[in-house]
Length: 192
Length: 192
Image (cartoon, rainbow over all chains, first blue to last red; front, side, top):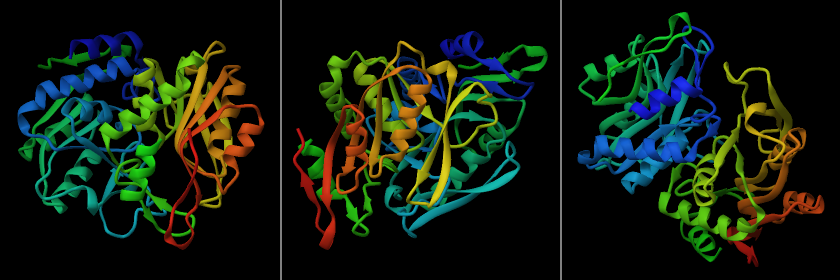
């Protein structure tokens, strides 16, 4: 998505070879007009997949999921990272390793909101090693629903999360793919 | 908002005299069509306040903030509950006491995204003792911007958060106000 690449170049801040800060429009301040365009782009890409639900993980995925769901005219489910006091025990869980924080955490989705006939599009802001998305795929497998695709805003293609998930036969589409951030310069892979 | 009261009666689950579970449409699964109506209702109520930004707190407030911001055609800022690795040090913070968890946590907003001329509408899913919203008001005061209103989906009016904030001269409007959940029965206060 050319507009996203341009926005990253204009507004993104490279904090290190591995950390890109895009909190001016994507995951702290939310540029609503722009996220609506992202939602429409995911719809354009996945519109023939019969999507019935958008699944993401709190907190940064929620805004993207909302505007994507609006484009598809379906609902959102966001996985929780902590066991809230009232989610109940009737849940699917998956343990995710965070390389950023060097710890494991558990993602949780209530069994009430994923069904066998659901055709799920998973969306998130970033994908690096892909462990969070793998946790969501694991939860979908537990729920016997079908993951029809994974839509990522920014994939770090020099890490291998996207590759690993594509090898499972799951369609992963990223709107911008970063091959390198070395020398304070962003190099993108070609995207559709 | 009659539609919200009806939805609470139809889909909400009373877990105790104090805990109402509405995660089927508001804060785990998100009923996108319904949340768009909530956004429009907040616009109807606050449209004359010259709102320039919607402020909320992760994670449950984000979806509501997104659809409200869309109705106002402005951006969202969501406060973080944890210090993320790349938010930086140039931040406003406020310590919030959680009665639910019996602990304190810190809410954080980057200084880049709240400005002196901003006219802010704070939104959230629930208000009970109002401590989270007070934290956001504190952050707005640090940023010297103006809180033009607080929009809450479900206020527990038998607690006193809304009252305390109204006494500061800040306009608080709740779409549903619950006076009591005793005996497994929800009694609403009148709302506009």
